[in-house]
Length: 150
Image (cartoon, rainbow, N blue to C red; front, side, top):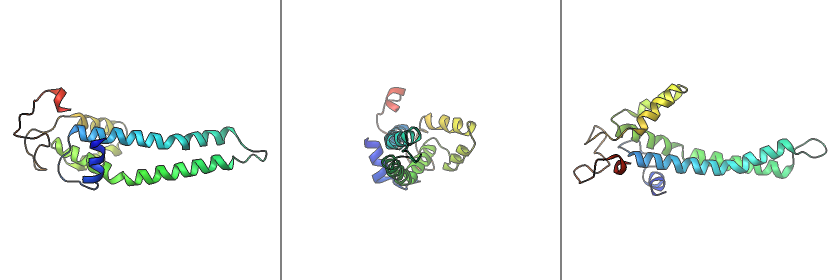
């Protein structure tokens, strides 16, 4: 949760610098959980509307209201985290020594997504690169095994 809040508070529309795997994946995980939780009422109401209607065949007003409010909340949340989501992904690409423009690979279905996933799971480029110093703490006694690099 700390990584999620850090991205929202300190790197809202920050496309410069580098982001560790942990920062990227924790932000992505918390974002997915919040999105899922916001979708539950909307999906439930829409399913209820599909299965239940009044005598005239119209959906229940209560279910319609729940679906509308839930959908609006989901839209507002999605728009609010759009820039931080892109920013943390760009900074993650920088951390692996790649340009943030490679996020456009996501426009290619399946193959582009797999390539981006491969880039996202890669370890940080050691030392400084043209986007800044290694966020893992270059020059400190940070162990270099997979368990601590996460």
